[in-house]
Length: 102
Length: 102
DNA sequence: AATATTAATCGTATATTGACGATTAACGAT
DNA sequence: ATCGTTAATCGTCAATATACGATTAATATT
Image 1 (cartoon, each protein chain N blue to C red):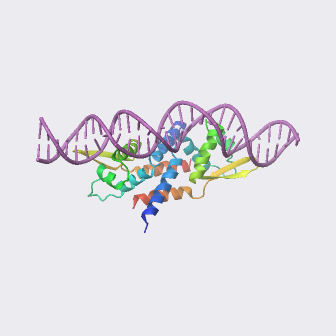
Image 2: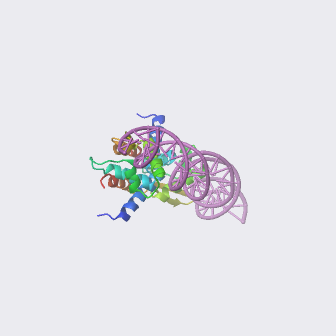
Image 3: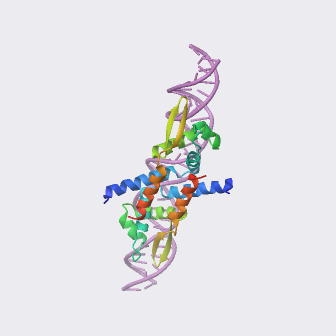
């Protein structure tokens, strides 16, 4: 049985994840990361190459996705390699399912 | 096979639906509407009673949800009754599934 | 016709977002 | 130690979002 406070937290978390997904370029970043072959890199410069926006703007979008919990970054020398947070799609789906049945 | 333009549209649509879901009160509105017993009303004044914000602000949130495609309103005399757009959760899930497997 | 109820819209103020170029920081290679 | 590469952060500007009270519009009731 969930308390009102728990429900509030779930709503806030769902809103937060949704907000991170609320920009087409950020959707595209998630799309790119979730379709990476396991042997390829996902460094920022590669994302910058695939998006029609400045490097600083890509970094900004990555920060938003990271803070919301969609992705994480691993430092590799001077590069940073991003990948999806484990089970994040399942977690997101769970939050959506929860609001559908009280 | 999807064209780049189709993919762009899907990203835009997913971003749009996500943006509408990106505020806790709007999540709560969706939650209320999806948990309505079939015999109960869902008029705006009822939503206003359940949310700690002004009537005008509730209307604004409803407009955002309606324009994004989450809900629709039916006029009943001086009242307006809102409900979820049919299959919207399934549609949303479909868009998310699509970005997961190219 | 006058009044009450309901909900949308308007006007406004403040906060947040999204974009950019410039700068900084961290590391590798020379 | 210097230079080049990579990515984060800073500062800024314009646009959008969020909240409110006041007003308007539409209908029901008296």
